[in-house]
Amino acid sequence: MKKRNQYRNHYTDGREASANVRVLEAALSLKHRLFSIVALRRGMRRLRRVLIILLITIPVIAGIIWGCMTAVEKAYSLSIDKVTFDARQKLISKEQALRILGIEGAINMATLDTEAMQTKLESDPCIESALIRAELPDTLHIEINERIPVVYVEQESGTDTGNRVRFFMDPNGKLFPVMPEYHRNFMGAPVWYLQPGEVESFTAGSTLSEDKRRPIVELIAAANHYTLVEIPAIHEIFRPKEWKIIITLENGAEVLMQVYDIKEQMERLAMILEHCRATGRHPRSINVVPRINPTVTYAEDAPASQSGK
Image (cartoon, rainbow, N blue to C red; front, side, top):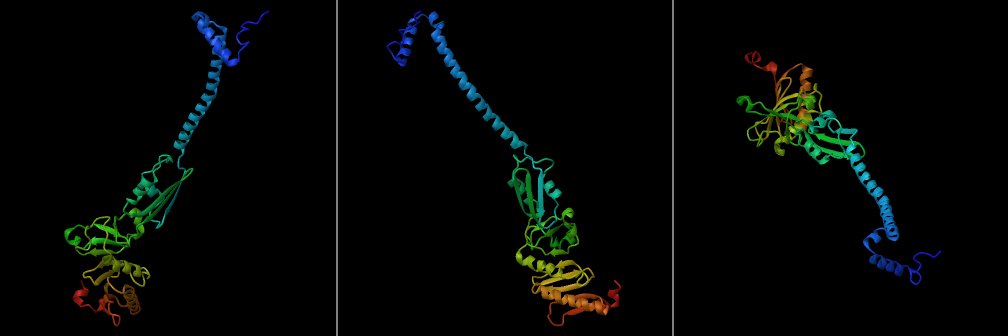
């Protein structure tokens, strides 16, 4: 039996044979070309190559898409499961800080904006500074430094105008609101009555100048070195002149001081009060400005008409 198509590649190499086949096929009618076994086999080979390529590329593409979707889904499913909190002054609790941030329930790591959260905390006038950072996979660290109340600040004219608004002042002279939930341990702080013009705007966020606040801050710091037995709590503070400070103590005594050498004046006050306790006398006014022989007026020495008031 003779081989079919034996003359197609007898004297030619593979490339020439393939070209000759195409020429011969082109001479055939459309019907013969469609039903040609050679053409069918060639089409099947091409289809098989296409299918192999698709079988390889489709899983790869599908894997890439699945990986991206999984990564996005995992990122959006990362929630903060642990929040560490540190308040330097221990005035604000973790729950109060989260309430300031408006955080309730789960926190999503992917949508977390730590800078915005930090800005929000620092916008609270009772907080001096804040630091927030996220730590993968599920931890949020919050650190805050609260403002420490030194004294209440009130305008002296408030007794006449009826405007008895009070703020707290921190050691840097910054005014901030009185918040009992934060400052419950400072509600008994002394009141400093400001003279007109000592602060440009009597509002939260305003700052008193260094020369105005320094003697008052030094006064409170010096008083805190003594027990309430040695020096009773300071109730009110006035500064009628640049050089003069007048304080009233819880025992009713009025003390005249100057803005310099606060620490030494408090030492003299402590010695005078100790002498009063030892002698059973009650001071009404004390002048601790003189280094030698400070003056004391006792309640027992007041005229009968005054003592009976």
